[in-house]
Image (cartoon, rainbow, N blue to C red):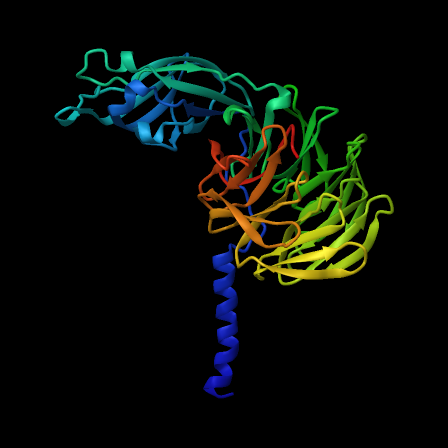
Length: 474
């Protein structure tokens, strides 16, 4: 074999490797946080700064939780630099795994502080020792606790010379069920419970390893979450935000995405490692059927009648169409390279599919005609949502910047929404008319109004936010 002949396969291999790295090829991931065991976990969120603090800046050196018996446990900081520009919304300040017990305070040690005056920026003195804020809360075994901190500006700068990190602490109110949303954090082993109207934190739910897809039974007030690291489906009582049960699958399944039928009686999971889907009876909470599909199924899409499920086989370049009642494959659709996920039109007669290794969105006519059109969307599409009210198609890219909006008739991008950061999952709040966008790298959930196109909120998430569901979802 001469040099030129040898160079061709090498060049092909390099292209594949580079494409996988740039596209973020999603092999089966592992959650990194250890199980809590007898410990609990604390999440500290900081409320927006008051306007009085517009000229204040400070750096936090450390933050700790103080138990009633005097035990001081350091927390992991997500923020160290504080200024009004960064504190115009609620922010995740710190978190940590703590021994169970009753806690009495949050101790904060400052590194530096300054205040902008008429003559420029002047340095403020900071206490040599950590400043302990009163904060009464319980940490329970295997549970998460959320505490919000609100800067008490007058107490913090009482003498105008020294800045004391004085905060008022409280347990945030849990939003009403009809205003609640749930977002899974794959690498944090948690679900973020949030108010979909205010974009504020409500609670955190500890789940077990690798929470991924989540589905909501609004009648029975239950949520089901696929736990990829435990080969189970977690069951959550959303009235009390309590993890109440596990449904066992097979060892090595690594279930990722999950859907439930409209009557709430049946769930289907995509088992990424075993290349199967499970059909689960949610009343008995047992698996009742298992169907082999293509390689590396991760995402699922159910039709609105709950009769068929589309299984996106990333490494087989195919979509398996599962008939739930028959518990069998009804059809197989051929795709381009690396199908990730898709959406159905409001009538359910068209399926839009985007890919990992292709710049095209395929349009399938579901009356037996197969793929009828290709929409060039560029490489890196990672999220899609069809608005059932208008059939407009919202397409997000891993590189971020904008969400392209495609006209349902011409299938061309005639509009866009500004959204900094790469998108990985989207849904629509039908009551507030907001598009909710997960930004995994930034660990953010963004709210954009579809009428005004203005950003309505941002919420800090845990590590590797994966999926979300909300009451009022369109």
